Image 1 (cartoon, rainbow, N blue to C red):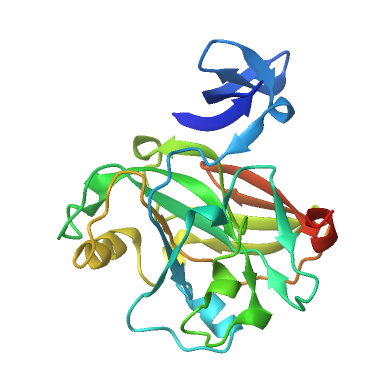
Image 2: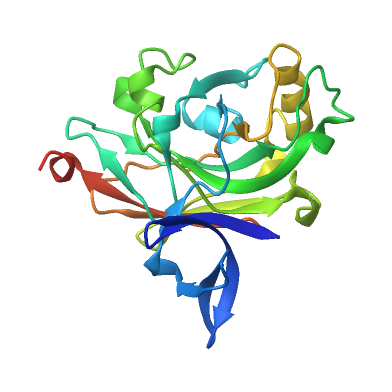
Length: 255
């Protein structure tokens, strides 16, 4: 099952996909059917702690001239980083290199504390697509992403759907793709994760309690390129969804 959270006519709704006259639409929780572009898309679930992985694909680590890590590089992100499908992400005017990161987001469905790898997947509610932007200019240390680089308002896009875990039989073998203005720039597969989902849940739950709504951003493969104001970025993951986002210049926010 696919579920979204949207705002329509000033009210928050849960929504599901609907086809109307051959066109994609949304069925709201009150039964109304509306066009996809008639709503404001929100992250598709009530988000708790956002736990992000850096350099979790070997090809991406090599792309940035780093060796594969021996332990997960993990950092947290605040609630103001979050944005929904079709949202606008601000690109700082002084940024020389800002790039997208197409990622599989793993959503926790029930409390996990000291969970083994063998039991880890029982704690997953579902999955969605994430696009976690980074400004490389702002990094003080590649292994310790600072706040300006990875905790910017509106830099982490989630959606459009939360897909139930039961509908994703093999999250360890999903193709990822990114398109910038219609041109494919990134491709990968979750089988190439250095640290897979069961490992990450075991690792994290050993020292922090994971609760419903917590989300693990599992990292991005190689193929990141600089994006500028006006670029439309589309991130796709097979069976999960297609997440669209647009870069907007600083001056739009300062008017």
